[in-house]
Image (cartoon, rainbow, N blue to C red; front, side, top):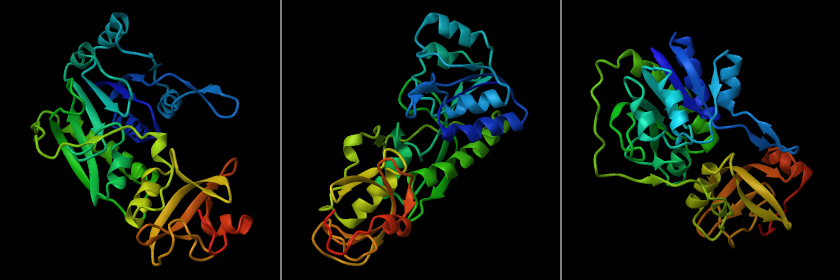
Amino acid sequence: MRIIFMGTPEFAVPALEALAEAGHEIVAVYSQPPRPAGRGRKDRSSPVQARAEALGLPVRHPASLKSSEVQAEFAALKADVAVVAAYGLILPQPVLDAPGRGCLNIHASLLPRWRGAAPIQRAIMAGDAETGICIMAMEAGLDTGPVLLRARMPIGAEETAGELQARLARMGAELIVEALEQLDALVPEPQPAAGVSYAAKIDKAEARVDWTRPAEEVDRQIRGLSPFPGAWCEIGGARVKLLGARLAEGSGAPGEALDDALTVACGVGAVALTRLQRAGKGAQEAPDFLRGWPVARGTRL
């Protein structure tokens, strides 16, 4: 098929690679424009743009799809299908209507649960036992279109959003290739009205850990916000990102270190911090972190 691929972050890269390997003609790749990044604040291409260019594919990165000129350029590609994976821009109706067989979205949840911007993080933070991938025929509503294919995946007890995203990205790549192979035979399944929930964009204000909350909630917050933006607390007056955790035995005053190995008391129960990052430093496993910065029993975080 003639395909337009639309995606921006690392999550979308395996799907782009899989479509290219499957022999589809990718006539253009749309990705969000390069953004300032790093200490020098130099413009950096998105992971999708970088991979597309390495594959020799033409890349377009309009700041918006609302102008008639951009929409005409999109339609002129005469694509059979547009495949969308975490693109990050709203697709106006003329864009949705342009490909002959519509636009298909690789969505990282079991729709209608977790429509919206941050389904992977929200699934972990809510304590969901499983999630998955839906290949959805796009329409004007926010992730409201009928589902063509779905696959389920359990969420690991200590899995972070970054780890889960990597597994879902591979699943999404396999499922979109399968969907295109079977497109004529697939029957769109309308989403039920019951069970709708929305995965709001992660706000950095959510990232500070409140140790008075139950350990289950603190654990899910840390794992759901890892690696970005990263849950955080203060240790000895310095801000530290908490990038990994697991539930642990113990009790004490909220935020109290219960041992010398970063087991921390919560409002109910405790968590063991397993991966941390100081400002200006790389992420470290807890034993390595403690060698450089011991946190003694009784320390209040």
